[in-house]
Image (cartoon, rainbow, N blue to C red):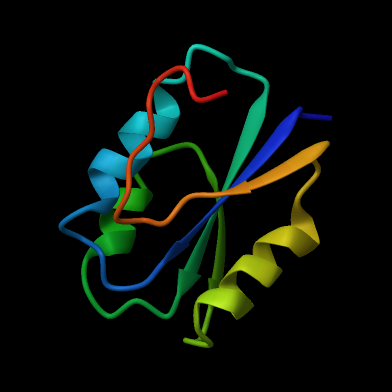
Length: 94
Protein backbone atom coordinates (compact mmCIF):
# COMPACT_ATOMS: atom_id res chain seq x y z
CA UNK A 1 0.00 0.00 0.00
CA UNK A 2 1.50 3.37 -0.97
CA UNK A 3 1.94 6.09 1.62
CA UNK A 4 0.32 8.75 -0.61
CA UNK A 5 -2.30 8.73 -3.35
CA UNK A 6 -1.87 11.76 -5.59
CA UNK A 7 -5.01 12.61 -7.56
CA UNK A 8 -4.73 14.91 -10.57
CA UNK A 9 -7.93 15.88 -12.43
CA UNK A 10 -7.33 16.78 -16.09
CA UNK A 11 -9.52 18.97 -18.26
CA UNK A 12 -8.10 21.03 -21.15
CA UNK A 13 -4.67 21.69 -19.65
CA UNK A 14 -2.32 20.55 -22.41
CA UNK A 15 -0.21 23.67 -21.90
CA UNK A 16 0.49 22.80 -18.24
CA UNK A 17 0.04 19.08 -17.62
CA UNK A 18 3.56 18.06 -18.69
CA UNK A 19 5.21 20.29 -16.12
CA UNK A 20 2.78 19.08 -13.47
CA UNK A 21 3.45 15.40 -14.14
CA UNK A 22 7.21 15.91 -14.36
CA UNK A 23 7.18 17.56 -10.94
CA UNK A 24 5.35 14.55 -9.51
CA UNK A 25 7.59 12.02 -11.27
CA UNK A 26 10.72 13.74 -9.90
CA UNK A 27 9.82 13.37 -6.22
CA UNK A 28 12.66 12.32 -3.93
CA UNK A 29 10.15 10.23 -1.92
CA UNK A 30 8.90 7.28 -3.97
CA UNK A 31 6.17 5.60 -1.93
CA UNK A 32 3.18 7.03 -3.80
CA UNK A 33 0.69 6.31 -6.55
CA UNK A 34 -0.58 8.80 -9.09
CA UNK A 35 -4.17 8.72 -10.31
CA UNK A 36 -4.91 10.96 -13.28
CA UNK A 37 -8.62 11.55 -13.88
CA UNK A 38 -9.44 12.48 -17.46
CA UNK A 39 -12.58 14.53 -16.93
CA UNK A 40 -13.58 14.48 -20.60
CA UNK A 41 -10.76 16.74 -21.81
CA UNK A 42 -11.16 17.97 -25.38
CA UNK A 43 -7.55 18.99 -26.05
CA UNK A 44 -4.31 16.97 -26.28
CA UNK A 45 -3.78 16.69 -22.53
CA UNK A 46 -4.19 12.91 -22.54
CA UNK A 47 -1.58 12.46 -25.25
CA UNK A 48 0.87 13.96 -22.77
CA UNK A 49 -0.50 12.00 -19.79
CA UNK A 50 -0.20 8.71 -21.68
CA UNK A 51 3.60 9.11 -21.74
CA UNK A 52 3.69 8.53 -17.98
CA UNK A 53 3.19 5.26 -16.08
CA UNK A 54 0.35 6.61 -13.95
CA UNK A 55 -3.12 5.18 -13.37
CA UNK A 56 -5.76 6.79 -15.56
CA UNK A 57 -9.51 7.06 -15.07
CA UNK A 58 -11.54 8.24 -18.05
CA UNK A 59 -14.96 9.79 -17.56
CA UNK A 60 -17.29 12.27 -19.20
CA UNK A 61 -16.90 15.83 -18.00
CA UNK A 62 -18.46 16.10 -14.55
CA UNK A 63 -16.37 18.84 -12.98
CA UNK A 64 -13.46 19.08 -10.59
CA UNK A 65 -15.17 17.66 -7.50
CA UNK A 66 -16.52 14.62 -9.34
CA UNK A 67 -13.10 13.98 -10.88
CA UNK A 68 -11.45 14.09 -7.46
CA UNK A 69 -14.12 11.77 -6.04
CA UNK A 70 -13.48 9.28 -8.87
CA UNK A 71 -9.81 9.24 -7.90
CA UNK A 72 -10.63 8.78 -4.25
CA UNK A 73 -12.68 5.67 -5.05
CA UNK A 74 -9.64 3.77 -6.34
CA UNK A 75 -6.95 5.35 -4.14
CA UNK A 76 -4.95 2.90 -2.04
CA UNK A 77 -2.67 5.29 -0.14
CA UNK A 78 -2.72 6.01 3.58
CA UNK A 79 -3.00 9.70 2.73
CA UNK A 80 -4.74 11.54 -0.12
CA UNK A 81 -3.45 14.63 -1.83
CA UNK A 82 -4.72 16.60 -4.80
CA UNK A 83 -2.67 18.52 -7.32
CA UNK A 84 -4.32 20.78 -9.86
CA UNK A 85 -3.14 19.92 -13.34
CA UNK A 86 -1.94 23.47 -14.02
CA UNK A 87 0.29 23.48 -10.91
CA UNK A 88 3.62 21.86 -10.14
CA UNK A 89 5.25 20.85 -6.89
CA UNK A 90 8.68 20.90 -5.31
CA UNK A 91 10.59 17.63 -5.71
CA UNK A 92 10.66 17.33 -1.90
CA UNK A 93 6.96 17.92 -1.30
CA UNK A 94 6.52 14.37 -0.03
